[in-house]
Structures are given as C-alpha cells and as structure tokens.
Image (tube, rainbow over all chains, first blue to last red; front, side):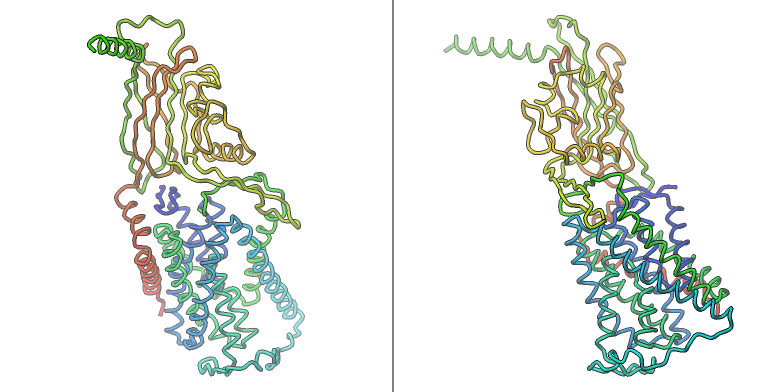
Length: 307
Length: 254
C-alpha cells in the first residue's frame, strides 16, 4: 500500500516506512540510542531527498526521546539541571547547524559533507566501542578485571573556570565543557539528522564523569529539547519536514523501541556494546566506500538554490 | 478605398484558406490530475482530429502527429564529481536556467522521419532541440556536457520520456496519444502541445493547459508547511511528543 508523502512529493510503501521505523526503533530501544544515524541513511538510500530525510527524521527522534524521557522521569534517573544546560547549548548549536545545512545545500556540497561527517564520527565512535567491548569480553574470559579508571583524570577539564554544581549527578564542574558538548551535538544533529546519543553517552561518562545511571535519561532530555527545536527550525526555514513521513516513522519507531528495550535488558553489557560498536562501524564504512569508490554516475542534477 | 478593402478581403480569404487547409482539433481526457494519498501515477490521453476543408487536395505524404506534455519550467544545475584527495566531490557545474521539470514526447513515427532538424529546432521539439537557455532558435542548440548529463539523468528518472510510435490513428483523421504520468511527476501547470506534420512540414499546432495538483488533504499540508511554517513546525513537534507519550503510556510495564 503506497502512501503519497506531500512534502517529499513521492509515494512510498507504508509498510516499508513502518518497517524501517520499527527496525531502527528496535535497535535504538536495545542499545539506548536514538537511531537517527541509521534511519537518515536508510531513507536517503530509498530515494527520499537528503533535505527531507534529515528534517523529517528529527521529528521521529522527538517522538522516540519523548517516550524515553517519560520512562526515565518515572524512575527519577534524570539530571534536569544538566539536561537543561545541554539543551540550551544544543539549541544554539542546532541554529548554526540549520544555517550551515542551507548554505551547503546551495553550494552543492551537502552530500559530501554529510558523508564525511558520518565516516569521521561513526568510524571513530564505532572503533572505540568495538575495541573497548572486545577488551572487556576478553578480560572477563581470562578472569582478570580491567583496571578501574581513577577519578581525577582529565584534570584540564576540572581546572576550567565557571564551575556549576549539578546535584543530581554529584558533580561540581565547569559549565564550559558542558556547553561545548551540547552545542557540538546540537550542530551535528541539525546537519546530519541524528540525535547524537551515541556521542553524548560516552562523552558524559568518560569526559564529564556523570554517573552511568543518570546518563541515558539526561541524554534523552537533551535529545528531546534539541530535536524539538531542530524540527521547528527545519520547518520554519527550510520547509522540508514531511509530517506524514515523520508520523509513519514515529509509529513504527515507538513500537519497535519497546520490544528492543526488552531484548536489550536480557543481553550482557559487553555484548550489547560490541554489537552496537560493529553496527556503528559498518554504517561508517558504507559511507567511506561510497566516498572513495568511483561512482557509477559522475553527474548529478538539482534545482538551483538547493532541493 | 473600396478597391483596397476588396484586395485586403481577398488576401485574407486566400491567407486563411491556406492556413486552414488543415486544422487540428484536440482535447484532453482530463483537465486536472489530483494527487491523493494513494497516488502511484496516472495517465492522460490526448485526442484529436485533423480537419480538412473541401478544397484541400489530398497529400501524398501521410499525416504525422507529435504530442508533447511539458511540465513547469525550473532552474536546474548539473554538477560533476571529481576525485580530490582520494574522495569524490562535486566540482564543476553548469546551469540550465529554464528547463521543464517533466517532458513526455509521443509520436506516430520515429522523430527523424517526422521532421528535419531545422523544423524541429525552430519549434524546440525533441530532447536534442529543446533549448536549455532562452527560446528556440533556427539552429539546433549547442549542448554542454552538463546539458547532456541533465537530459540523460531526467530520462533515467522517468521524467523525460520519448515514445515513438505510441500515437495511433483510429481513422484517417482521428488520433489518440496516451501519456503515462509517473508517481514522481512534479506538481504544477502543464501544457499539452500537438503538432501536425506532413512531408516534414508543420501544418498545424495546438496547445492546451492542464494542471497536476495535490488533493485536498495533501494540499492542506503543503500549504500549511509553506504559508505557516512556524505553526507547521510547532504542530509537528506536538504530534511527535504526543505519539511518544502515547507509546509510553500504552507500553508502560509498571
């Protein structure tokens, strides 16, 4: 059954859309990430223009993170103050991202920049996760515990000025790295159509030393706030959000996420991180191959001024 | 004075009889194609008759019909990828300031047999004669590599089609030309042009407008997105939050 998407101006099979939403939702529920980094490329590969794909996925991420935030708020594992700092800085980053997005589209370099960013971020994060998970699994098999990270590394972060107390996270740290992190992820979110959870979660744990229990709920607050703003901005400035496309993805996504979360809870932490690492890495590799391999078609056409 | 008028009248009669030796009467099967949520493509049929007055002598050559369906004009840009530092990125580009977003051509016979290059160039008829900048000229347009890429890619996407021999005569005068509109057909105003040729000479030409528009619900959404972008964005965010909340409630396990 085909459904005509009014903003994308093309029909797409509604079951394919629901299925893609559900599959990505399943993975995101399982790993606790937004899944935008999978959904946006999937839509682009199935023929939707990158402009509409990136903008519409941001509305799907809003739905997914909204249901996540509610769940974590009930469990009271959210640092709202930290989330607010990250969201406000994320909104600044997102505004810049939406603007850069439009400028790159006009210059015809949007696709290559998106691909390069995917390769850089997915490649790096995927590699780090995979290596870390493999080491954890090997250490467990040998029965030798990994050396516990001592607090007080990254002393340069601790030494920065403008310190703020985040009571829920039991942190008293400079606001500068928090704002920089939020802005960077807001920027990437708008530019690449990703929530950025897969960057935010490790950054909060390893750089800012936020307790692991608080991390996911707080990340979701930031994702919800920043992506709601991004959806609004993409609608207002680029008019590329397809609400029908977004809705089909949302419905598939929120249902898939519930089942994913159940599977995720039954898997061991290292196994989960290894699988996620490999997944992230393979999407990055796919983009790398497309960039380096000689394309079948050297020419491309688009409307003047983007589109 | 009366003599002058007489000459003028005679000239007009002569002229009109020469012009109206053959006239075309054409009609479209639909004036408006509406795109609803289940749209997967449509078809439009152009009917026509070749009307001959009593004095027209029968021609030795058969009638040939060319039908073009031209979509809204747009400014396009074609880009070529080049390898730079190991990766393929867009470098050189060429602009096509006034080209149709859709063009279907249907004929009774191969284009080369219908009319020569000079005649077709003057009408801008055919993918090789369609001007990409400005109006049709007596000379065939000069094609850059970007123009060539544009025509190739538009044909690959099914937006430019050439169907030689698809126009059929049902009787010596009556013909029909079915044209398929693909699912990705651009929205906007279209012009159906019918050309009547015989022996490589253009005898008559008619044009008719029709529109491809989104249906009620689809159009409402598009209008909202373009005229009230802030409201549309806000509504999308509310819908998304509501969907998320609903899912959270529906699947709540505690």
